[in-house]
Length: 336
Image 1 (cartoon, rainbow, N blue to C red):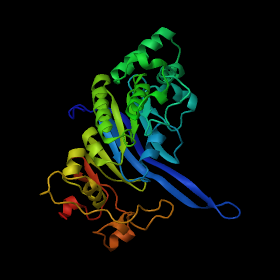
Image 2 (image 1 turned 90 degrees about the vertical axis):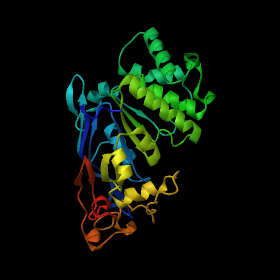
Image 3 (image 1 turned 60 degrees about the horizontal axis):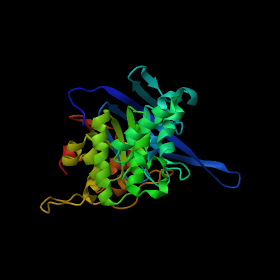
Image 4 (image 1 turned 120 degrees about the vertical axis):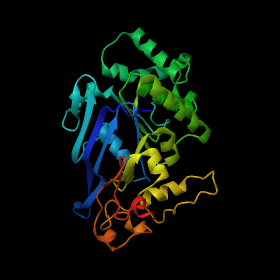
């Protein structure tokens, strides 16, 4: 985990938006916009683990893909602070100029089955980022691949095997090895354990924590499971329909949630202490990003909603201790 007394900026996201035009009708005319990501801002510090959490469809995975430059945002900025080159604005640069940075920003995918090419050996899969990133001797590649496989909990003897010969947990270890073989500064982990059995999930999470210490990694951890985020991340942001509704230190948010949506997410986590008062369970479905409600997007599901919530969207405001929330009647201030 990050030393809170030494913060060095690695990634800064400002007012990031990704809007899709909805087509329909006989002439295939535009019928509106889907606001998948709508004004997201946060900072990620070196050596830290930052979590993005929310229900499916909230925009967290799209945010990760925008940072990876898999897609181009509608607006906003993404600044990567490279150790040698300094601050680099990622949005306007071409794919050619982005290519050298690929080895510094890597991704671990959700599904270990579909993220590995079944026609390639493990050596080819893990070594692909090395070949794409520049020249090198074959024996150097093999040594690096063997070393990262071993650190990921796999035998180097597996290099000539194909993905079908491995279990789900082993395939995710291969995916992790592929992401780390270039020694990146930032790793975006998109739901890396959601497709695995519970017993295997714990092993993969422990591995990711160990590797963070070994390689001094910085994580952007995307998940819908708050218990996973709590274990992995020192800071988190809660997203709802493309916007951040609460952001702050993990322990502060878990002990003192300030937004009704966060409270609802926390209520889903199984409680070991039966004397702990449960939070209010979430009701209804997540808002439609192509037909958003007026005012606060969460007000149709919120047990504390009042007239102002239906008419005005609340801005993020500071609660102190690096804790912010977007709620007119936040739980922390009102004591609800």
